[in-house]
Length: 78
Image 1: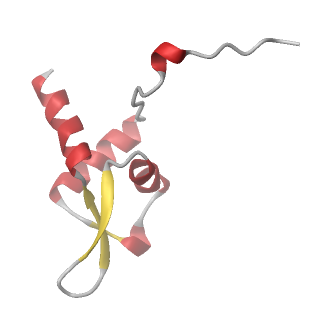
Image 2: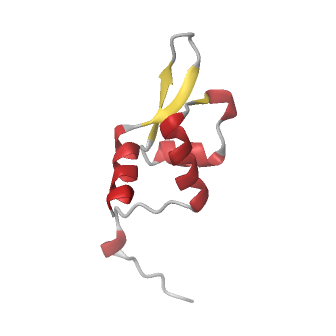
Image 3: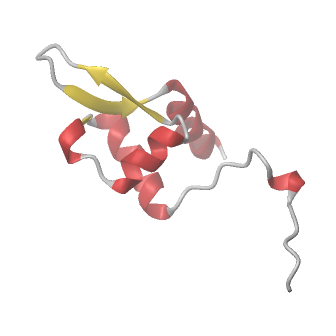
């Protein structure tokens, strides 16, 4: 039986796929309707990088959160 090691030094490290990064960049400029959410959007929500808001027309939309914006700003600065 193979032992599974825990990487405590990696706990709390954010790992995003290329698709999730692209989705985050798209969401910075254009909200996505709830009904058009992809698995990438759902993963970003679980990571608290996007949030749901109700628009003026009453529709629920995903938009980038403050945390998501901070991630993109950090990448731009890096």
